[in-house]
Every structure is written in structure tokens, then in C-alpha cells.
Image (cartoon, rainbow, N blue to C red):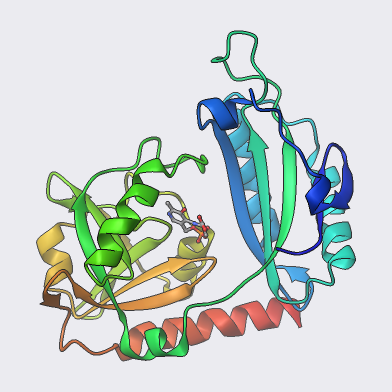
Length: 273
Ligand code: PDD
């Protein structure tokens, strides 16, 4: 965690940030957030993350007291104040303090600056294992702070020696705990259409590849794919070489996945340097 955050309408040392104990974020787990990163002091794809954050606030009926322009300014001040060359910014809007302790109220905005540690190089080279679990995130399209199930599941996937989880329901896969998923079969790249967060990384991977099939994907299809990878802001693209006890393809990281990862990095560098 970096020393300065935004809370109570100003930039303050993080130890001074407070939240009311009756805020819906505390007593009901109700709130929204977003997370993006800086590359060379520039917030990568900022407008896309702001679009999603503002939409999440509207869809959860939590009034956001700041305009897009004000958010941009706060973010720029925080990057400067924390000297955040390569790091993460987390915007959190709480559910607010509600008269009946239930209905959404005026949210409190926090923005935190964080250091960002990518997964180890070994994971990009050897790929990771996912544990499959039957579950589907509720209101998956909105970036709420409700990760109770995934946090709870994390003990299970750690015990299984997996890096993360792949959720499926009625035979269809959706996403991992904090990432989207893609499969490649016979050169065709596909990603699930429904019950997923519309990831900003997913969006740019779709643009980079050009002709991604966005459609229902069956669990068995994933097992039989040539390559599988997950995408998120904190990982970019991480190859998946095993699901449960089943190896994907020949169990090695595929060339196409690495090619897409390199193209994504080139795009980020082009935009920020
Ligand atoms: N997670 N799906 C879920 C459920 C997520 O929480 C995330 C992001 C994604 C990928 O979205 P994006 O490419 O915009 O990061 C998909 C963030 C990084 C987190 O919770 O840490």
C-alpha cells in the first residue's frame, strides 16, 4: 500500500482514512470498486475503467458525488503524490450509511494507490492450474465488492495446489475468481459471453485478436482446447496448462497465448511511453 489515498474529499495519509462502522460496505458487504494500473505514471485505459466504475455506481443505485473530470484529477494527483510509476489504483465506493441499514445510500469514495506484483515469471512460462467449482457469480456484470464466495473458495483451491478457480454452471464455464477466460481450438479464440465481468483486459485482448467468438463455452470444450488462458489487470494474460487433474493440450504453454501477451504489452507501451 502506498502512503497517500483519497478519502473524505481530499488526499490524506492512508492511516487517517476512516469508514463508518454502519456503512453498508461493512454490515452488508454492499459496494463497488474498480482497479487499474499505471504504466510510466500513466493510468492505462483509464477512460474504460471510469466508464465501468460510473456504470457500476449507477447500476447499484449508489450515488457517486464526483464527476468523471473530478475523478481524473484526483487520480492524477494521487499518481504524482505517491510517485506511482508502475502500480495499481483501487477506487472503492461504499454502499453508504443507510437509515434502515439496508437501502443503498450516498456512498463514500476511497481511492488507494498500491504497488503491483505480477505473478512470477515461472507461471507465465509453465502455466497455471485451475480448480473447477460449480458456482456462478451473482450480478457478475457489475464490479461489486462482493467476493465472499471466491474468498471462501480460495482456501479450497490453495489446498488443491491450484493458482485459482474456474467457475462453471449447467455445463458452461464463466470466469475465474478475478479474471476472464479464453480458449483456443484449431486456431479459433473464444471467450464466454454471459455471467462474466466485462474485463478491460478481455476487451483489449478481443480487439488484439480481432475475430474472437463470444459465445457459451462448455466445460468439456475447455478441457479439449489447444490453449487456455485467463486475463485480468493484475495478470494481463496467464496461460492455463491444467484444470483439476486434466492437462490442457500437451500441458505446455502455447505460442498463440504468448503472442497475444506480447501484443498486449506492446500496446500498453505504445500508449504510455
Ligand atoms: N479483478 N472477472 C472478475 C470477477 C474480476 O474481479 C476481474 C478483475 C476480471 C478481469 O477484469 P479486468 O481485466 O478489467 O481487470 C474478471 C481485479 C483485477 C481484482 O479483483 O483484483
